[in-house]
Length: 48
Image 1 (cartoon, one colour):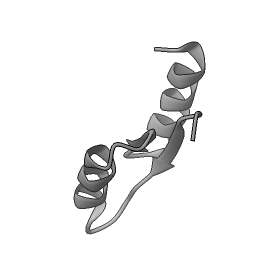
Image 2 (cartoon, one colour):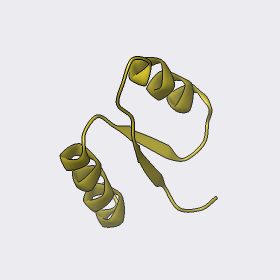
Image 3 (spheres, rainbow, N blue to C red):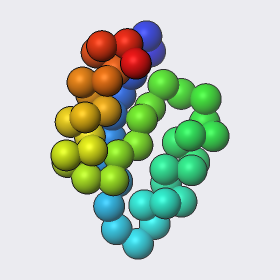
């Protein structure tokens, strides 16, 4: 995939899921809240 994907993870295993996504090598950005996810999307679009 050539575009980043932003996912919001919440719950008991959110940290574990975020670590697995980070270690996967895929272009997936984990966010902790909807606000954080929105900020991550804006940053990804702006190329930051």
